[in-house]
Amino acid sequence: MIQDDAQTRERLEAALHVSRWVSQVASGCPYPSVAALLDVADLAARALSPAEVDEALASHPRIGSQGSGSTASLSRAEQASSTTDDPALVAAMAAGNAAYEEQFGRIFLIRAAGRTRPEILAELHRRLALSPADEDREVADQLREIALLRLRTLFGTPSSVSSPGERS
Image 1 (tube, rainbow, N blue to C red):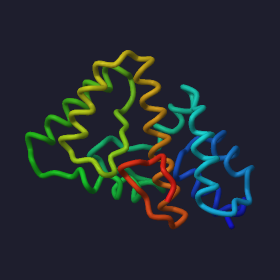
Image 2: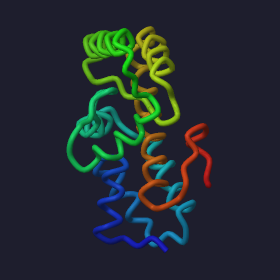
Image 3: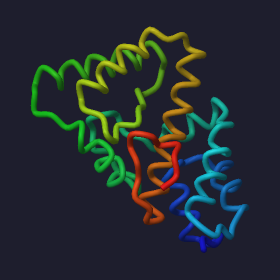
């Protein structure tokens, strides 16, 4: 059973650093299972406002950077499959990140877990062609997917990177 306590709130904040979302998900406690928690968390994350997206992005490192703080180890684990020593790929990712930041005014965010660096780079290029409104929706959805994966990790349920919306 998942209770509304300090540890649960810390885990929720590590999954998605959005105050409204943490409060909304925690207010549903106790949850009889991780699956029940994931259902509520998924639904609550589908309503992220632009300000909440900005709030969440403040705690995410750039793809390829280690980051710091309480979510650094989660980010490192999520990006593990996409690490590369290929200097051309590293340079292409840096250039893509810079272009994205110039175009959209924020870091490029993607659910990196289960994706290779070339796949991430291809997705970055695809998203550079999106309108700002479409990209806003894309970022909010990526935050939701990351949050669900992190909740599975933080509450001890194996994750499925190929289909983050499914329950284990």
